[in-house]
Amino acid sequence: MSYVGKDIIIFSVIRWDQPLAGSAVAVAKELSKNNRVFFVDRPYSVRDVFNNYENNSFRKRISSVLFRKNPFLEVQTGFSSFVVCTPGLALPINFLPAGLSFDFLNSINSLIVKAAIKRMVKRYHIKEYVYVNFFNPVILPTLSIYGTKNLLNIYYVTQDIRLSKYMSRHGYKAEVNALAKTDLVLVSSKNQFKRLFSISPRMHYFPNAVDYEMFANIRDSEVSPPLDLANLGSTKVIMFCGYLSEVRIDYQLLKLVCEYFPYYLVVVVGAYDEADIIKYKLDIIPNLLIMGNRRHEAIPSYLKCAHVAIIPYLCNELNKSVYPLKLNEYLAMGKPVVATHFSSDLDSFAEFIYLSGTYQEFLENTELALAEKDEKNAQSRIRVAAQNTWEKRVLHLQSLMQQYIK
Image 1 (cartoon, rainbow, N blue to C red):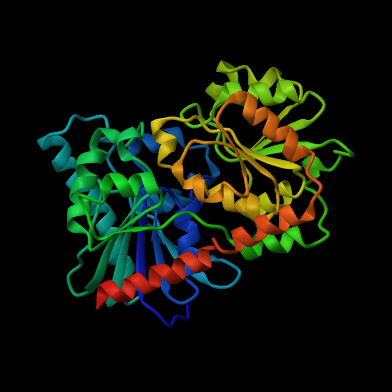
Image 2: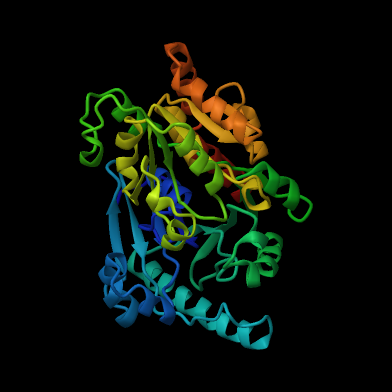
């Protein structure tokens, strides 16, 4: 691996090949252009082994997780590469109440992850590094390894941890600790910046972005549609790309869109909760097509088939702290975007997207978006996306790193 910058160790709450890896992997890919990047996966617990045994992603790692064999994988990005590190098996302790038992067992989990990092440090001769904890403050919010030099500890906040179903139990207290200890804090939403700035003034706004080149290449080429959308004919498509979950998605609104546009196809591309499909009876809606998860590299091809892209998020406390990754991806394809007004991060896009305050307004805006014919609107959206690329975000991050290291 060639590099001209710093060695960077990223420890993420998400594994690199999970459907929701999103910003963590995007940052790793972009940083790897000029730095050696080492991406440490969230460890599997004993419970995960039973729950994920048939999962291909887990089965590829089984020898690393259970026997600590071959824990390093070099991932090619097309323009560079980064190393993924799989830690050994961890203890399932999130169910425990706060207290001495949890703290003791959590320290063991931290040692398990740290042991994997130490092997990585030795294997790749890492002498000094920048450490980035991607929203996993419970385990290793900061990193110190004997014989090496930590140049900078960075903590990245992706959402309001108090509202995370899994992490709220122990995460909030751990996050306050992380905010106090780390040298630099990044937040992906304005609401989170406002909430946390008083705790950590070393904070910078670092919103999600888009791999602009990947989307532009598909947008400007004559590629065939994905096989599962090859027979659309003249049918217009309203598309949502993202995770279907009742904590985020306004299912009543999604069903209204299907009902209001019965002759259009509403396509959802992304992972989903099976229980939600049954609970909200989404499987019986004739013009709703739920595709399931697709590789991120395939998303531009699906979006190219869309006439309108939607973000039917609930206007709740959780989404108030969300800057959706998909927003700039929609815009990079030049697609009209219709969204609920769930976050103040959308305000800067008000001129370029259809923000909707009510169900009726959302439906009317979707109708307006479907009727769009002015190519200038598409070009305006593309220009906005070109200003919100991961390349620009990481250049800003590298500037901050240099500033704080000095």
